[in-house]
Image (tube, rainbow, N blue to C red; front, side, top):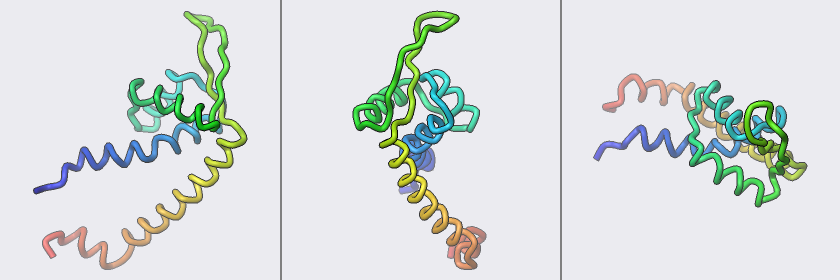
Length: 122
């Protein structure tokens, strides 16, 4: 049975989403729609139905906090910011990402991997 690549890509994106949200908030406070737009600009499509539960979980875990601010166009906005605990967690995620990235890049650059990618029937 062939592997569904779209399902695999979706699982990989979900695994990275927490990391990406924390990276964005490390750059500065943002409200949910802004986070979605910035993710989209980075070619990572995130739906509100995925983002809001994640933001709530990160807040409940003490990694984020929020504040309400009046909006010049519409209702008040909930701005999220990363906490000190969130910054420590983000550093741990970055270290894990660096290790995983190094491993994958090493395997991609090895002759075994190149041979397999060029000739997948082997």
